[in-house]
Amino acid sequence: MTTSPIPVAPRSASIPTDRRPFPWLGLILLSAGVFLAITSEVTPTGLLPEMSSALSVTEGQIGLLVSIFAFTVVITSAPLTALTVRLPRKPLIVAVLVVLGIANLATGLAPTYALVVVARIVGGLAHGLFWSLVPAYAARIVSRENLSRAVSLTLAGGTLALVLGVPLATALGHAVGWRWAFVAISAGLILGAIAVLLWLAPVAREKHEAQDAGATKRRDSTVVPVLVICVTVAIIMIGNYAFYTYVTPFLLDPVGVPSEYISIALFVYGGAGAIGLVLTGTVFARRTRLGIVIGLAGVAASVLALAFTVGGFWGSMVALAVWGLAFGMVPPLLQTRMLQTASERFRDTASAIYTTAFNVGISGGAFLGAMLLPWLGIQSLPLVNAALTVVGLVIVLAVVLRSRRRVVT
Image (tube, rainbow, N blue to C red; front, side):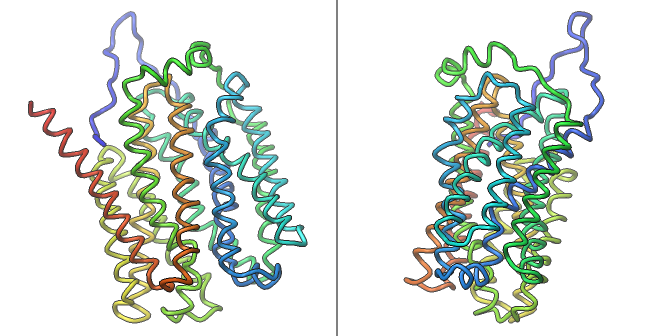
């Protein structure tokens, strides 16, 4: 991945500069929707013991709820994006948020594991389409000069979901029961749908995008670079979610965090991730390559420290904070890079591919963790995370070196 600046059309009498005001409200609404959607997806990771006991299944089966959700996204996001390509974007986003809200309410009310699985599948259908819509929508309501800034703000919701949303849902689940955590998420999604309906500015679909979508996939020169980014994302996410899905039992044993402090430990991760998010939108907004490299290196080093519980309990808390900070930078920087790389006509399709890759990582990581847990034990999971993160880092560095050679030649 390169960080060459986005080409900007020269100013002239025939090509006026885009002076649209920055749409703070619209982007914040999209970011809030992303926050709630990702919180919904990952919340079972913080409530494994409670859900396992209430539904009479193993913790591994609860962990697989994340895989089921993500696998649904993987196999349906691209087809649903193609099927809805001619529909108006704003009403579609509203409908998707409503369906997500209903799915979370059904999860909270479901009396059996099988019905929870059905609810998660419905949520996965809506979630995949939502993630395909939002980045391209954000890109349409800003000038090209503000693309990186807009993407960072919109994707901040996803990072905040991992670093704050899941700990909040976990704390609520511990305080009043896991079902109420999903009911609260459902209420938030319905309120979010109403806010989007009232205050998000509509956008017009460009006619050529719907007509030429298939042709664009075949001839667009940005397809290969986008695919490289998406493969890298999948590898990194598989490693991260192989560990993060089961981070609660890991913190309980071998780290030794008392059960009543699990939500606090997750807040440590979350608070550090929020700092990483700020760095993404400020220090690394125009230095995406550097930010990605630093983020991946930080993830690998911190999870290795956790694997060997370097420094005991407090050392593990420091490593957890570094992991949160470093990983808080990685997803928004990678998706910003993807949208900067993709041509305008390819953005919707590129977003669907990215969503698929991201959720291949979540689903594959949770599944891999479930398989390794009884075989190699929970202490193997941070090692797997570190190894796959290093693979992603090697790909990023290889792309950077190749791009520099092309510039020289």
